Image 1 (cartoon, rainbow, N blue to C red):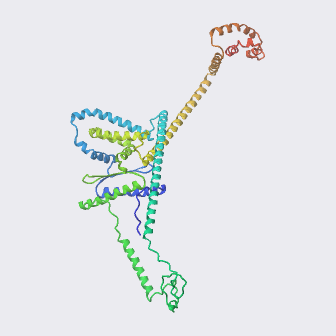
Image 2: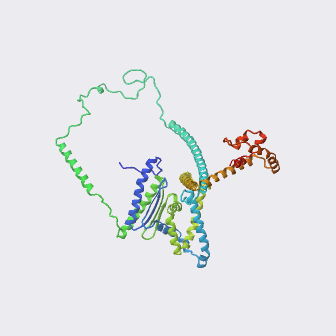
Length: 505
């Protein structure tokens, strides 16, 4: 019994999907490596798991060089109609502006995806967090609407199928009634073959009386196995030994391990390339469907012919996602291409890239979500959830760092104040008293009327009782405030706290 055909549909069980992805991922990377060695082909494989983890393989020294070759191959028809030198000179400034615009878009897109957050301040992180929260709300609302529409559609189809089933059942019942054989008429005078006239109809012919007599056979036990013929056990042992020897020889005569080196024979190399290429493309499609992964496979044969595969035919989208992961390396490659003067090809590629980035950024901002299906909405929601987690983690880290810095400054200032207090305690006390007087004066000014006329007449009217207060003895440890506390209300009200502290001082 063979294993059977694998149904190409998404594995719903999460654990089974992860196990299948791990096994098929290793097999896919191994097949890509073998194809590049045996057939001298240039292979680039980019694989994103359902959780967003990146796996890659490149037969060349640098993945981005293979992707650059792919871009040149795609835009070969546009390069054939290259502009003149004057047009190139006029378009160079536009190329510089376009390149700066692409860098800004890529930086904004990386920030929305929770990447490259180190240069951002706390307020910028808060704005980014609010934007991601709004986008998540819109995406979830759109996803709920898509699910409800799909549910209504399925209910409508179910109702249609139930109606069709009822119609088919009715037709089948009518056909069965028409095709049924006619029943024989019942005859009450019919005999049963034994001479009785009981009126019972029987279609069986009469049996002879000796039909039920015993045949005279001996009873046989069916559960007891038959006795083996003479010499049968020896033949069984000999057959078992022969079968074991054949299995042992079959294990020794296996296909053997294929030596991984370039096939020198040209025809054999071409045949092997054709077979292994088809198998690799098939495996890429299977892991994409079964494990809900994003796969981009690029194969260049020895003659330079291109073969490619991308999940949902979105090669540009997958390569753009890969370039975000390898941003630092991409900057070095782009700088190297500028020094070589290859900006004409870069200009065409940037124009195509701007459209892709703008479309992706609209989705990240919660716009133009009607063009996305349920699977794409789920992937976008997962990306933004991870982004929100990174943004909040970075914001918490910045706030903790700010708190620690402020605590450190506070501690250093306290230590500096202690040193100054020890060096000059008199000046320190005077400074404290001066601050207290200023504070009391401010409080007094806030509680009293602010008009100058009323305040001046009030002070002139209450100035006389203060001379009587100064005549009270204070030798017994009494302060001016205690003496003034025993005075009438019209005397105490004329002594502001800052004047009392000045007199006591």
